[in-house]
Amino acid sequence: MKNRLEELRRQQGIRQEELAAALRVSRQTIGSLENGRYNPSIILAFRIARYFGMRIEDIFIYEEE
Image 1 (cartoon, helix red, strand yellow):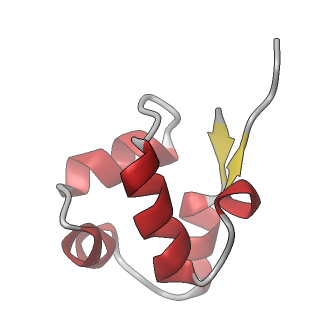
Image 2 (tube, one colour):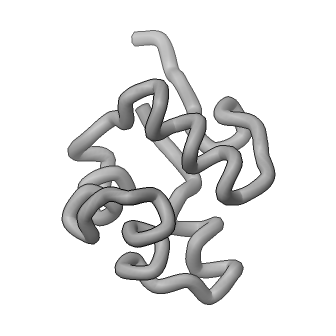
């Protein structure tokens, strides 16, 4: 699953460490999400969407194979 997390974070001038603290996850989790190595739980996806004031589907792009 692709996502716009890094793009959104950079647009707002937020460091990975800051986003991680706000979402109560590690900086490594943010890095893994941004690199597509990890897909978030539904709870984390909701936290991310609320943090950015967006819908989940505007951040995470599901592509059927």
